Length: 180
Image (cartoon, rainbow, N blue to C red; front, top):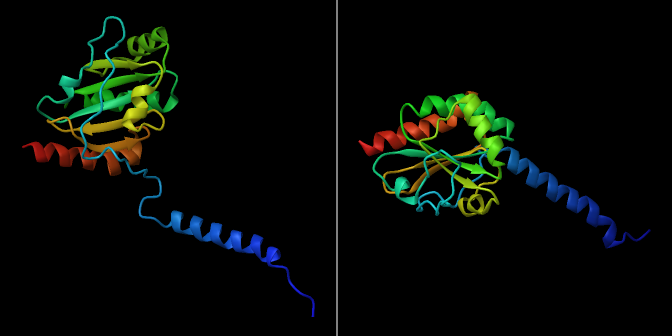
């Protein structure tokens, strides 16, 4: 009887372990949701830079009464462009603040001039350091902030279609109801 080397069992064992991991990941309740360690914590500092002619976003604004949004965006980001009409619509209901991420100043200003500026105030993050502090993985990302500057919810991806109506909007409505 030929003897089987233990090393021959290693590839099938690795395959079974990977397959089980992938199966578990696909069957989670919300496999697209990346948990944020920022939920329930104070919003990190905002850079004290802005685009010429725009209102400077400050840390104090994030701690003013009422629910507000902080959106990390860039003019070079196609999903940011896709969600822009939604941000414009939301800005009629509550303050929407923007953090322009790794964007040339001229391109950012051109985008806002051409498509409209939904932001009550803007900060710029040319090197992406603030995005790291906030746990942003890629733009666009939108945070719901309460009246004390605490992060209530993080939405990774554009605020469009079913993702907006099924995931983001219920969280926003919950935050707005809690402030009353």
